[in-house]
Image (cartoon, rainbow, N blue to C red; front, side):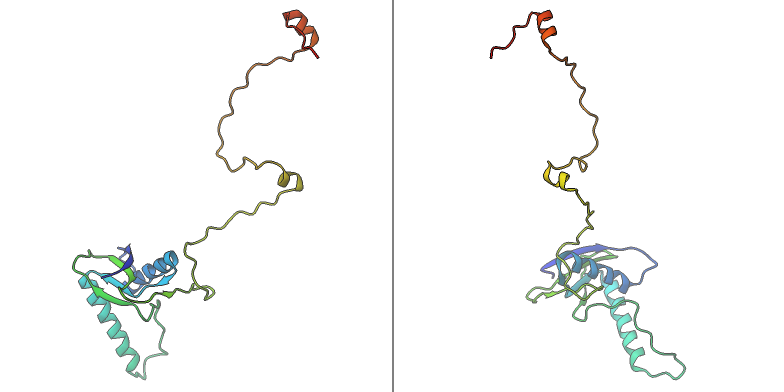
Length: 172
């Protein structure tokens, strides 16, 4: 049973089960900032995952003279991650998260080894403003383009037009 989690769906037949779980783990860490400890999946997939891990462990233990240098696995999963079967899960769905009563650990980003942010930051567009623009009202460039309102017909009122239209002159 997962205390907090992310439901992940991946039905790509070209990807291995480990790659699918690794993608789900990466997304969970990216969204929450924590390293997951439990993955619940369809029972047949959980058995296949355990069999793959056992097969890899045997290959690592068994020395073979003809075998070339051992190649590292294409994907690495967190060492604390347990994959368990869940009869209520459908094939190709993965419920990734924290097991109850387990202390969460900060996730690290792959690129620099720094803790992952809580929410992925979007790159921001840097706009330099001149001194005149910085002191003026905010620009309206970010607003969606809309059609301008039609201008009302106005006329300039002068002394000649005031006399012609019999508008009294202002006092003062």
